[in-house]
Image (tube, rainbow, N blue to C red):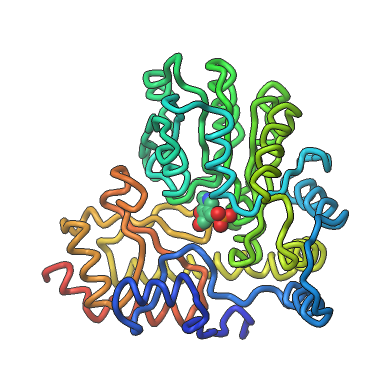
Length: 393
Ligand SMILES: Cc1ncc(COP(=O)(O)O)c(C=O)c1O
């Protein structure tokens, strides 16, 4: 049966970071882009309708957060994540990239250390080092098919000078969804070493069919007292261009410090479209959201079948969360530069090479599967026609 997610929408010439900026970067308009982490699906109609109401009104004055904005977030968290929040705990911030950087600036001092797992989503890592803090990298370890946290390694790197722990949950780029026991162990580690725990849960709504997401906000009171969670609906409803996110900070003192800086920087007022998008998304888009998850699951199935048949040297790791796939090319025995060159110049498909996520990402690439199936099929067909040129067979 045809699905609305099957529709291919031309995103070129719309100032689109995925299709226009990457075309310019790689010098061609004939690439299929599977890199940047947004979806090639139209946003739910209800959100577009909310925007239309704003444009029909025609006055784009300063805007505040509405009761429905807060109510929507509280309902969503309770229904989807089984966590009860209060309105007071919610702090608006335009972007998670901003809140990650602010958290480092506010809760740590220059020269102090922040723990982060690698391979890491680049903005989280850069939020540490560009603020002149030291990033203590703890590479995830591969146990069988799973990437896991090496708690012994964590104990070996933490020092008196360590102040914060940055966690991505679900984890971009390896697509893990942390289990309650893992989150509890992270929480206990932070309590033991007196660390602030900053958790980026932007992908929290995007999990595969058999996986349950556990928010770090469901941890004990002792952990919540040192917890700063950044969340957003921009992945959920494909609205990252709207620029909207929020922080959830149970501890009042930590929350006040964050709010004070957001106010001082003049970032407390949301964009008028951001409020409309969140209100509509949280009230009227549950069906779109469920259908999108099912479509991405099917895309994964389709991709796995295709790769098994045509690209046996590419190994796809389990996708518990995100709409991305983390894929190893170790069996090909080529360098990252060679593989990238093959993707861009032979296959004419763009994906993210693993080193974008740091040294620990070497040997992998990340591919976005939130696109109409026919677009993925076209990308894989291009790749299969020239696969021999990268295997050397
Ligand atoms: C883990 C993670 N955090 C944050 C972001 C970006 O969030 P924002 O657009 O709110 O800065 C992304 C986008 O891909 C992401 O994958």
